[in-house]
Each structure stands twice: as C-alpha cells, then as structure tokens.
Image (tube, rainbow, N blue to C red; front, side, top):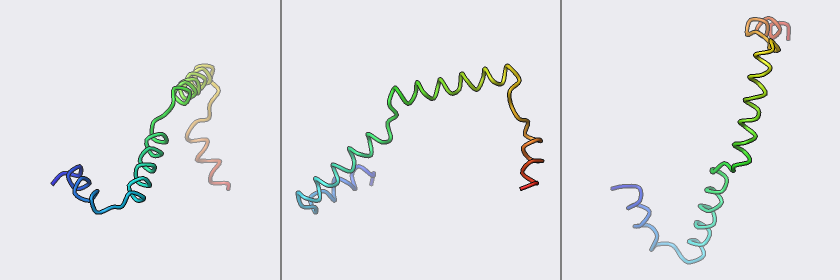
Length: 72
C-alpha cells in the first residue's frame, strides 16, 4: 500500500474540522518548505561575497580555527 493510498483510506475517518486543520497544516508546510526567490537571491549573493573574500585572501584556515578552538 502506498502512502497516498493510506492517506485516502484514513480521510473518511476524520470530521470536517480535522480535515480543515490538516489542510491548513499542509498548506503552511508547503509555504515554509518552498524557498522564495528572495531567499535564493540572498543565498546566491552570500556565496558570491564569500568567493570574493576567498579570492582576496580574506579567510581563516581550518588549522588556525582548530588551534584557536583548543584555547577555549
């Protein structure tokens, strides 16, 4: 039995209130899980800025971070 079939089988057992709540939760989940174009643009901008810093030599080596962490 597939997941979709299981959901379809269980739907008749729910009242309208429960169905509305589940529908609302699904819609909210889909809005949260789908990144907006602004989120994608911001992410790409952060990547571009990080690459420019790396090209300019502005970064901390992994070994240096490890040494610093030992002092904590």
